[in-house]
Length: 365
Figure 1 (cartoon, one colour):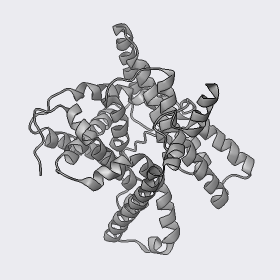
Figure 2 (cartoon, one colour):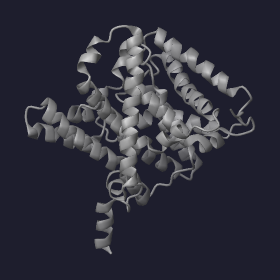
Figure 3 (cartoon, rainbow, N blue to C red):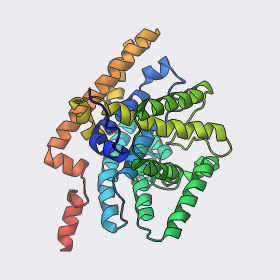
Figure 4 (cartoon, rainbow, N blue to C red):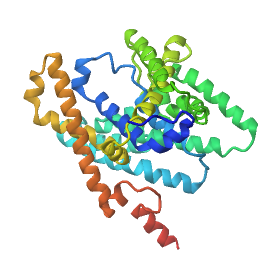
């Protein structure tokens, strides 16, 4: 065990443990998507938001973003290309297996809308997987952040801060069926942008000796208040508390920020956790693939899952299926990343690394 350096800033701690943090957040994401855990404790997961906010906060953590066509193109490759692959494969399987759309043309239209808009209702309509919303929203958030960071005048910065606060307070009051037509999670990005700016202010603070237990206690109290009040929160569909519910919004924001800080503290305690860092390095593919693993598990074990009734059984099957889903998703992600061909096509890190873009650029030369 190691003792966390009490003179270190939060940014330094994040820099040293970013892969562990991503892995811990992915494990919480997978647990949240597990039906057995949902049956075991249905109210516990209802107000969960920190697992999503943690990934968004990482975008605010490392340096400033500069708006440019190259920056946008690189984020298209990094976030939207994997999303388009996952959406296309899931849509095809969804149509062939479940026949939810009356015709192939209806499925194609739903797929096209999900490709261009990327928000949760459209992704779910096309593919049956609501969770695919995250990567398009991360793309929208990083673009918004780059526009904010590229502003050099203080009055624009303060104006942006004011707009971010107003958006955080009021966007949950707007009709979701209309605002979620804004492409690539722009409404979600606007809603959480103020929290991201607050997170940035925490980065350079020196961590006091008992900061970890304190933020964990704040999380337990605020999250417990949400659970006891049976509050349902969902970032993907903007089912969030706004200014019309100040108490719920306070606990929502406290539990979100404190939950991420608690994860940062907890993963920084062990000296060497290689398996956690390995998952973190493959977090994008693990995120995309673990729902597929859950579907396969449900198909292979329908009789067993139907017999599960007691709480110990639900806990056992929840833990086992989460481990199987994460393990199989990790194994396949390693296979993809070790293949130069597949990684370039499916998970490119830059625009020029993606073969269609590289070919287009060569023709332009």
